[in-house]
Amino acid sequence: MLKFYYNQISVNARRVWVTLLEKQIPFEPILVNLDGDHLSDDFTAINPLQRIPVVIDNGFRIVESLAILDYLEAKYPTPSLMPNEINAIATVRMVEMIAINELQPLMIPLTKQLVGLEVKPDKIDNARQRITTIIKFYENLLAGQSYFVNNQITLADIVAGTLVPSLPQFALSLDNYPSLKTWSQQLEQRESWQQTSVKPEMVAAAIPNMRAILEKR
Image (cartoon, rainbow, N blue to C red; front, side, top):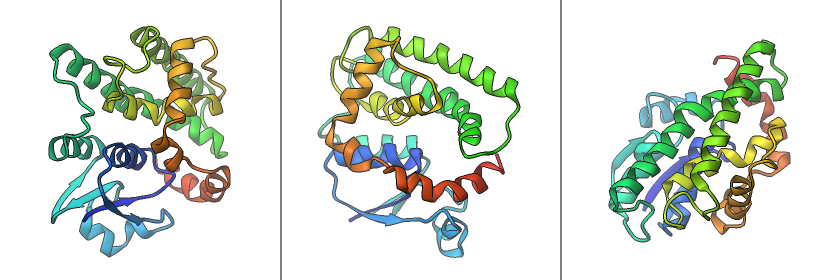
């Protein structure tokens, strides 16, 4: 059975977790505590980069969440989370890459501030402005659709959808972006989102570990 190394508070792990559930792939969840387990010799042997998620499928190891998503889509194509039409494929990749390369790094200074670390005000302001640009881009791309591509859930929705719904906790409201807000609420009603949601008490308990990790970034 496929082994999935994860932690509940990891956004990178969550997008893989949601994909496993959406595709109904049987898996063995292996919790990696972020209080040092990821630095242990045993886990380092699995992933020398000391990061989650990791998937091991029939002895084949994959690290990095986007690589894992591509593997799962190719190995387990039904139900499909990647369209076949050229423009649609490009749209999925575009949404994914903006989320990973732009949005997620911009959320780091905001998360640092949230857990009580000192961050320069101009860095916070710049992050908020750039995130607003991304939100507007996503809003225009959705344009009233249920999902980013062909009104069907794809990897684009999973990757962006494990980031965007958390923006309001950083005082970045989605109220002025009706398509994005409806899309976000719709995703959170899906069983895969509900099964992988992080309870507030879990976040509170994880703050010391999050602070320690973020201090290095």
